[in-house]
Length: 127
Image (cartoon, rainbow, N blue to C red):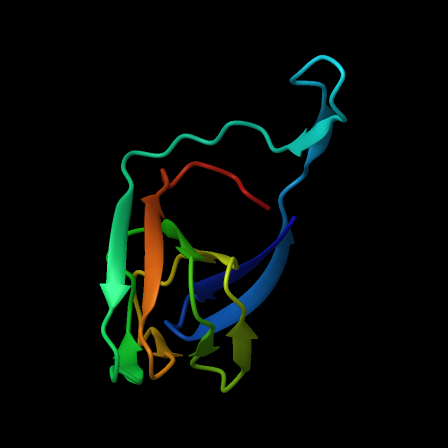
């Protein structure tokens, strides 16, 4: 499974990286095709959010904690400190790690959108 990563380098400049979360076919139910599953990852909490309609841009900001963010509805566009821009469709999973430095910009749809935040431990390796 592809996952976008946003991180800050030692100078505080944010960047993108593409990471892959391995999925393994696993037989869960008799007589039903296998479902591809990742390993279990520790998460400390889950939070749901609504980005209100009309909030088009969240200017330069850092993430408060290392977290996986899942866009449940609407697309989002990110810009990192190195000038790179990426667009994520609904259902995208993003590992956000730029807790220091200048951060990143996020651009949201006019109609608003639902998100899910899943903080992950600093020692959790996802790549």
